[in-house]
Image 1 (cartoon, helix red, strand yellow):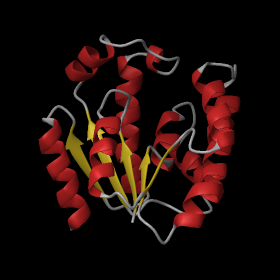
Image 2: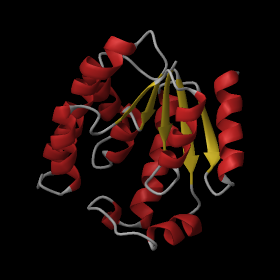
Image 3: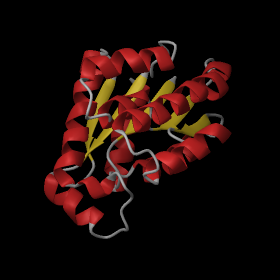
Image 4: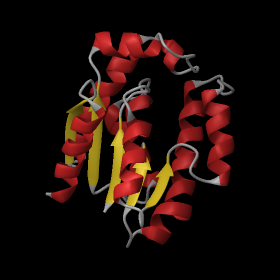
Length: 188
């Protein structure tokens, strides 16, 4: 399985990844962006706002994704891989570009290797406002609530357009309820 957990920041991805580590100790755990040495550098540049143009920022994330596929996903494709974010985020966050264009570019970056299981943790507007107000925000989060809600919608639209096996889970549920829903989905 190539499992990815998606959602805007504060949706609880890290918490659920930690829970999966105890349930799948043999799995390869990774993240995008930043799952490789080059990716760490590209992530720092992108999230630090170093790219001044939208196109440059988008290509930083595509470069990270291409490297991640070659270094992490392809060598482990016969194992269970669990990733914090993936191509889905890459497409969804590139809001300045048409969805279909981003799908094509990301398919090139991933050599058409797509996740077998996608979990989207979804937040309501009120819950997102509450969670973001409790932390220091990076350059992407500073773009605002409506921007992040649009990202969340683009994630759902992307998995449908790519016809990926997916589940959308209410991220305001208890940690245990979310864990159970994820486990049910992975055991289907």
